[in-house]
Amino acid sequence: MGGPADDPTVRRLDDEARQLALLIGSVTDYAIYMLDANGFIRSWNPGGERIKGYTDLEIVGQHFSRFYTPEDVVRGEPQRGLQCARTQGKFEAEGWRLRKDGTRFRASVVIDPIWQDGELIGYAKITRDVTERYEAQVRLQAAQKALAQSQKLEAIGKLTLGLAHDFNNLLTVIVNSLDLIGLTSAQDTRTLEWIEAAQRAADRGTLLTRQLLTFARGQHVVPEPHDINTLLGRSAEIYRRACGATIQVEFEFGDDAPMLDVDATQFEAAVLNLVANSRDAMPAGGTITVRTRRARCPVPEALDEGEHDYVVVEVVDQGSGMSAEVVERAAEPFFTTKEVGKGSGLGLSQVFGFAAQSGGFVQLHSEPGVGTKVAIHLPARLARNADGGDRGDV
Ligand SMILES: Nc1ncnc2c1ncn2[C@@H]1O[C@H](COP(=O)(O)OP(=O)(O)OP(=O)(O)O)[C@@H](O)[C@H]1O
Ligand SMILES: [Mg+2]
Image (cartoon, helix red, strand yellow):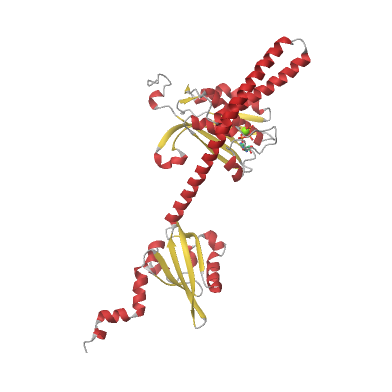
């Protein structure tokens, strides 16, 4: 007696089943569990407890579908996983699963069938929490998309800027010549009508170039201190006139909106562009609400860089709304869903360009058949300027 076979350590290591249990028991990053042939949990390791939040007592004997989201259960996902493992020898997938506390995590799942003497006795299921990797991937994709979009916009911007300047020079010649012709042939009413028509077209052209220049960041903005409600009130008639009789324009002025530094002409053009879009989205008539308020929030692209004070003007309609694809492209220059001659696709570009140039941003919410809300956020003046008086630093 007394040989190595009697050594308790060696005996323990010889015991294969015990070794395996020890191995599985020490894995904490993976939930490893055994299901019976019907999907009920027979045993699991501490990793399962760690990832899903249940204790042994709570989970052994339960059906494994309790880890799935209600939507996946309705779709029959748990059964599909088992069936796929049974018929194809393996099932692998990534999806959302539930912890005991109801929170969701991104799971990478593998299910293998366990056969004994040609009979299915259960399944081995391994689940890994890959939430962090998944979220990093989603963030990376969003950043890549934003970069591609901004490069595209920059290229279009450069092209537009060159064109708009040339176009503007040509228009100046046309407008001046029309004025001179108008002076010399003032007697002939037909000629006068033609001249007026040409002048209207040239005016529309001038407006368009102004929009182009704003979008291309070439427009010179002159920010001055303003009270947003006064600004809107001053242009209320212009907005109403642009809408015609079937559409009401209502103003809801927040009484706590701080002062802001803004180029009044650009601001008026931006709100007019939004009102015109809402009008076009409600061909059968309706109400457009122009609302002001103050807001304290972070910049959407830099959520972790702190909050700032904004003055917000919202233009809301109950019109046709936009599909997700249109929302995605709406602010692109020259993107329009309107027929030729009705829209040039520059309205929202001007709005977004103006907001960016003013140090703010725009949020667009739209739902087909429900309506659209566009919120221009413009930086509030610092508190010491709240009286609208001396800026002190200029
Ligand atoms: N309030 C809205 N309701 C529904 N769709 C909208 C609304 N605002 C914008 N859109 C959609 O976004 C597109 C782009 O709008 P944008 O103002 O840039 O150009 P446009 O109105 O087509 O032309 P422009 O303003 O230059 O005359 C529109 O063609 C329309 O499809
Ligand atoms: Mg428009």
